[in-house]
Amino acid sequence: MALRQAFSGLVPRLLNAPGVLCPIASSCSQLVSATAEASTSTSGGFGAFSSFLRSYASEVAAVKPSGLSPCDKLARSPNHNISYDESNHKRYAPGLDNKSPATLVQAGGRFFYATAARLLALKFILSMSAAADVLAMASLEVDLSGIEEGNTVTVKWRGKPVFIRHRTADEISEAENTDVTGFRDPQTDAERVIDPKYLVVVGVCTHLGCVPIAGAGDYNGWFCPCHGTHYDISGRVRRGPAPYNLEVPEYRFLDDEHSKAVIG
Image (tube, rainbow, N blue to C red; front, side, top):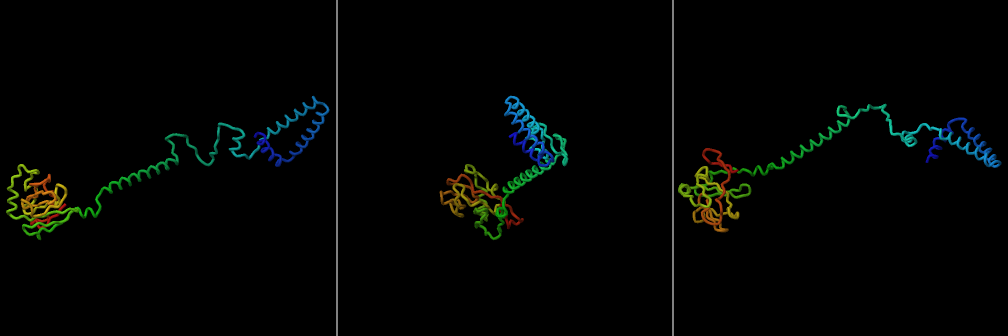
C-alpha cells in the first residue's frame, strides 16, 4: 500500500519535472556498477549496494505530491486536527445565542405540526355536530287547527310516531281529577300538558316498544295489544307490564290560539 502511494505521487513529478529522468539513469548505472562490484567483492560490494538502496528509498519517500484532495491528504497523513474551508460561509460557535438557518427549518416544521393538529381537532369537533338533514328532522311543525275535538292524529317525528289528542271537556276533567296515588309512574295531568285541550305523547309503549292503539283499553286512552298494557286519557300506565307512562316530547305552541305547535 505504501509503495503504491509512493509511486502514485512520484510518477506525475517524473513526467512533469524536466531533468528528472537523468538522475534515474545515473542511479541505474550506479546500480549496475554496484552489482559488478558485488560480484568481485562479496562483503564490500553488498554494503555499497545496500547504501545505494537506502539513499534511493529516502529520495522516493521525500517526494510530496501536490494537487491531492483533502481526503487523499488525510489518508496519506492522518491528523485529528481537521481544517475546513470557511472562505464561502461564516461559522458560528455552538450555543443558543447564535442564529442559524436550521432555526427557520425547525420553526416551519413546528408550524406544520401545529396546523395539522388544529385541523384534526376541528374535524373531530365538527364530526360530532348534527348534519343538516338531522337538524331538519329534529323539529316538526304541526297544524292543530285541523284536529277535531275527541280525535287523535299521528305524526312522525325523528322516526317515531307521536300521538296528538284533542281532548274533550269530560276527558280533561277525568284526567285532572284522577288520584295518582299508587300509580306505577305517578304524574298529574298538569305535569304532562301545556294546554289541557291537547295531549302530545310519543306513541311507543314503554314496555317493549310496540305502538299502542288509540281510543282502546279499559280507560279509553291507549291499549298495547302486544302484552296488554292500558293507558288512560293522559297517557299514564294503569294496567299491564309497562313500567312508565307514555313519553311526553318537548314541544311548544307558536301562537296564542294554540293552533300550531312545534315538536322538538
